[in-house]
Amino acid sequence: MIYHVLTLFPEMIQQAVSHSILGRAANSGHISVNCINIRDFAVNKHGQVDDSPYGGGAGMVMMAPPVYDAYQHVLCNIQKNSDALSKPPLIYLSPQGRVLTQKIAEEIALSQEIILLCGHYEGLDERIIEEIVTDEISIGDYVLTGGEPAAIVLMDAVSRLVPGVLGKAESFKDESFSDGILEYPHYTRPPVFRERAVPEVLLSGHHGNIDAWRKAQAVERTRVKRPDLLGEIKGM
Image (cartoon, rainbow, N blue to C red; front, top):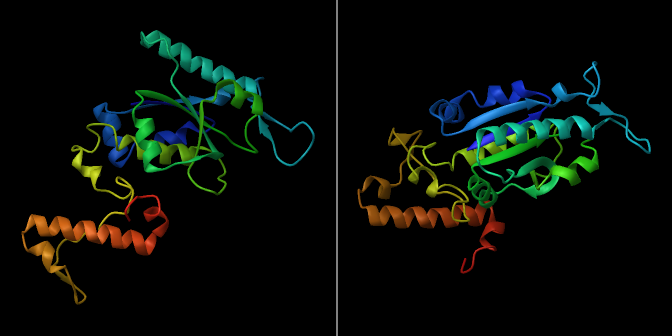
C-alpha cells in the first residue's frame, strides 16, 4: 500500500509512521508513505496557503491553488513510476465525511495506492473539494485542529489489513468489528491476579469449548457495551 499525504505538517505524519507496527511495515516495504508539503506550492514567497473567507467570518480558509498544485505533483510522480493510467482515490479527512468503520477500512485496503488530504484552519476552499476529492472520511463526530491525526488513524486502521503487515491474517480476523461485534476478553499469565482467576475453560485445552466460550463472550460484551451493533446483525 502506498500513501501519498498532502499536508502542511509532514513531520507529524513521518513521526507517526516511524514507530511500532507502522514503522516495521514501512521498513519491510509493505507500506510506503510519501508526504507532500502543501506549503511548497504556496502562492507567494511568504509561503501563503490560506486567506480570509469570502463573505466574512472567523478563521482562515486553505486556498485551492496550492492544494491543486500539490495534487498534480503527486499525479505526475505516480505516472512516472507506474504504467497505470487511472488516478488513485483521493480521501479528504473531514468531519463531514463518512465515519470510518472497519468495513470502510477494509474497502480502502483493497486499493494499492491512495492520496490523503489533510485540511487545516476553517477547512478547504470548496472548489478544490469539488475538483479533486473522491471521498471524505471522518474519524468521529468532533472537530480536530487539522487532518493529520485523522490521516494517521486511517493509515493505522488500513495498514493492519495489508497482507504481511501483521504477519498472519489470523491476527485480525477475530478482532472487534471484524464480524460486526466486539472482541472477546483476553487473559495471560499469571493465572490469578488480585483474586481474579482466568476462566477455567481457557485452561482446559478443549478448543471447541474455548471457541464457543469466546463467541458467547463476544456477543455478551457487545450486548452490554455496544447494543447498537447487534441491531445491525440479523439473528442477534
